[in-house]
Length: 129
Image (cartoon, rainbow, N blue to C red; front, side, top):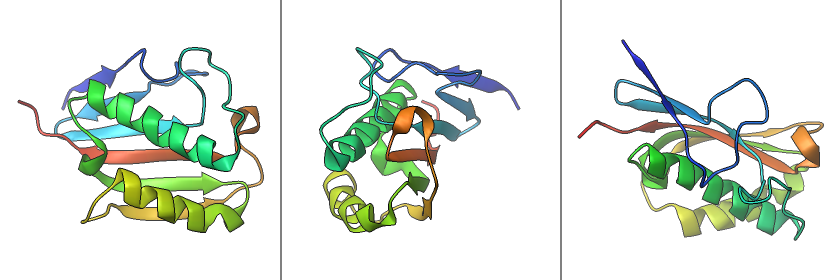
């Protein structure tokens, strides 16, 4: 099965040797997104809520480039440096997603790239054409 790299300037450029996303068949695998502003490649500084929103916006931009949207996510992984922010993630998810919600994992981690407080990656179903 062939692979197609998904790339958009509407989301932060990769900060290492990886693609923003890769499509294989009807599945899109999204790399982890941290709360970087794609225009400046700087971390948003307005607190954890702004960081969570930026990550959702970055995921949405990559999915848009693949011809999909947040509602096409089948599996979402969330990494938090402070699990006390988990209720806020849940609250904000209801603004970005509707039922049926994706399968999900939330994992506490010691640190994330560039000092981010949140990172998310996902797997989406996106049939061609």
